[in-house]
Amino acid sequence: MILTVWVQFAWKLKNLPANAPPIASRYTAEAATLDDRELLFAAISRSLSMEPAWNIELGARVKLADELVNLNFPAGEVAFIAVKHGARIIAASAIRDSGDKVSNLPLGVCVLNEYRCRGLGTYLLYESLQRLRDRGLEEARLVTKKGVPADRYLYPKFGGQRTVLSAVPA
Image 1: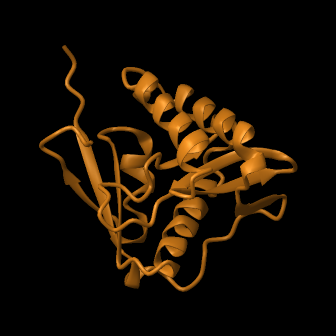
Image 2: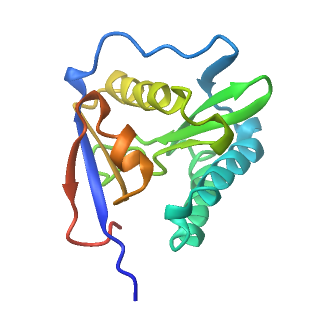
Image 3: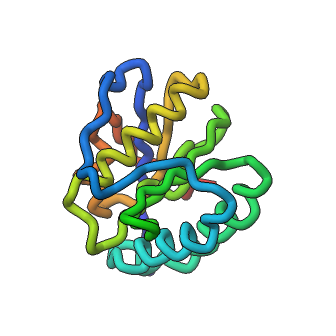
């Protein structure tokens, strides 16, 4: 049996830099609409499926993405930020501003494999944290699997503090 180790990142939102990191002008970032649901789900599930570190938990992560996109989003319980290249959604994050949640970014930052290493993940993380700060949160949290590339390279940015969890997140 392979044991998955989970980590939680926490950001003090008052320490967030004043300016967003730049992205190339060919990309746009905007709040997703309900009309974007199909493209959102396709981009998120494809992003997860192309990351080998998620293989064991892929079914559960895709199920969570489906619930967030098709149930929680229409109910107003979660919002999405989408990065587009033309009409195509190439990166997305879900944000949940409820302060009592284990994770305010329940899916983390999802970027299609062919668009990684272009600063889009950094930009999307910043925008997600900024929107949570604008909604009145003082701290944002995210839970991810230990060892995924974002755990090592993305989530420590902007002062993200990493804690290994002793139990599987709910």
